[in-house]
Every structure is written in C-alpha cells, then in structure tokens.
Length: 289
Ligand SMILES: [Zn+2]
Ligand SMILES: [Zn+2]
Image (cartoon, rainbow, N blue to C red; front, side, top):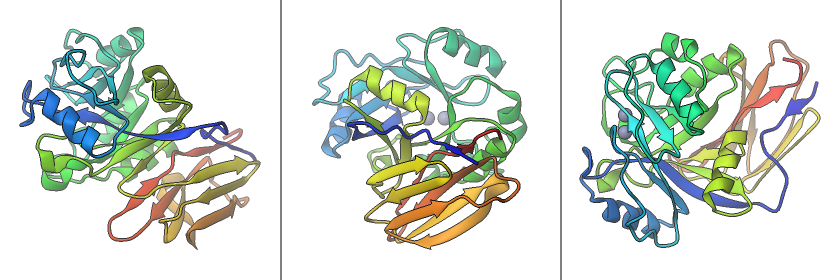
C-alpha cells in the first residue's frame, strides 16, 4: 500500500492566510483597510476580503506586503460558498451546483463554508455536501462560529465525505466580522513564494494545513510511511475512514507506518498542542482506494 501525499518536497516556505473576512461593505465592523491592517499586524502573508455577495476592491488598499486575493462569499438563497479568486460576483442561483460550476468555469476556487453553523448544526446539510460536486474543500474550522450557534469544528463532516471517496481539502478561516474574530484559525500554505498564483496552486494541490496555533515544521511521506515534525505538538492522532483513530502518538515527531487494515482509503493527522492549539493535515489517500 502506498500513500499519495498532497505535500510536495521543494524549497518551500510557509505562508499564513485567511480567506474569509467581512468588512463594512457587508456585515463586518471593520472598514476594508482596517481589516487588512489588522491581519498585517498579526503577521499574515495573505488575506481574502470576502464580503457577502459583493467583491470588495482591494486594489485601492495598502496591502502592507500581504497578498490580497480577490473574492467574496456567495450568501443569498442557500448554503454559503467562498468564491476564491473572483474579480466580480456571479449571478446568484439557489441551485448551488450551478454556482459551483460557474466558479470553476471562471477558474476560481470554491470552499463550502461553516457546515456546522446554526442551532441545529446544519447550515449545510451533509446530504447537500454529498450531492454537490466541484468544490475544492470545506471549512473544517470556522473561527466566528466559536461565538455563534453551532460548532466551529467540522472534521466529522470532512471524514464522512472522505470516507465516501470525496477528495476535498480542509480549510481554516476566521470568518471575521469583529476584530476579536481575527487570528483564531488559518491556512498554512507551502509555496515557493507568496504570489497569488503560487498560493492558489498549492491550495489546489492540498499543499497546506490548517492551524489554530500549531506550526508543522515538516511533512514527509514515502510508501506507506509518514513523518511529521512539529515542535509545538504534544500528541498526534492519526485518523482514517469514518473518523476511526488509527494511532495516538506523543510529539513532537511522528513516524508512522500505515498498517494493513481495512478500510483504509485515507488517513490524516491531527496535532494537539498546549491549550486549544491544534493543526490538521490534509488527507493522504491510499493508492488504489
Ligand atoms: Zn457564511
Ligand atoms: Zn462569512
């Protein structure tokens, strides 16, 4: 058995970014420049302002050296979807498959947002996630949901999708509405540089991980082995199909050999650090699964 790793070896650096930020152009409380200032101050490398059904023009802003990716959040008439790399909005269609097809036709990236938001934790029902096609990933952590109804974490939704053979990546976004929503969770992208094209290509390939405070220093996979170094990780958990825990290993180094068990169509690694600090790798798919 061989694992297919989304993590490429290369002269990569790690770039920290948030793809989900509201401003006063929709229901956020920070003017666009203030939102950019805030994230630049937190040391982020890239940011997407994602107002509701409206592209905020970032070309007029001072990026403070950050890469500002244009986009917005499809909101009206259905489940919320991030349209990443969008210079204009698409006509709203309640049929979200129509929206996803339009995003892909426009060469954008689609992320299904906060599936566990809401009193009944079903902003986006699992059946809808399963029925829809053409999205790059889902938010496995949505920061603002920490202070809203429902759950910020949605890894169980992800495991259900992955177990059904769906190859979708996990994203971590603040969904910033207030200043205190910033810096809760982020995407750490391995790329040669922080140019928009480099970042988007790495995200397309899954060459990134999600964090709430843990840095993964390196990820290597060869054959059926995975090796992860993460100086802040106290404990690793290796998760496989249907959310089953394959192994629990003390940090800061994981050297894991995937066993010959069934089912094993994918595995992914969760890193537990101090307090609520965590990181989540993307899935490694079993060859032939
Ligand atoms: Zn939303
Ligand atoms: Zn939002």
